[in-house]
Image (cartoon, rainbow, N blue to C red; front, side):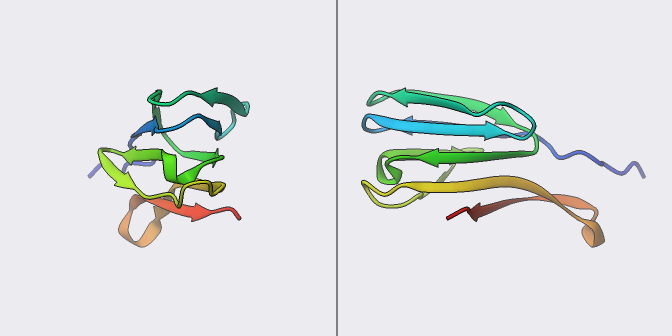
Length: 101
C-alpha cells in the first residue's frame, strides 16, 4: 500500500455579487489584495491552506469543489482560513474551516 503524504488540491470559485475589497494569502505566498466589481469571479486551486478576508461576506459567494459555503451577512467583514489537516489515525487529509476573528 502506498501512503499519500500530500493533500489533493481543492478548487475555489468566488463570485462577487457587489463591489468588494477582497484579500487572500496562500501558504508561503504574498498577500494579494484587489477590489472586485459586481459579478466578477475569482477561481483557483489550493493545495494546503489559504487565508481569506472579505469586506462584504453576504455578497461574496464561495464554492469549494462545487459546494457553497455561506460566509455571513451583507456588510459583514469576515476573515477565515481553509486548510488541509492530516488525520494520522485515518492516514488522510481533511479540509478544515476556521474563522480568524
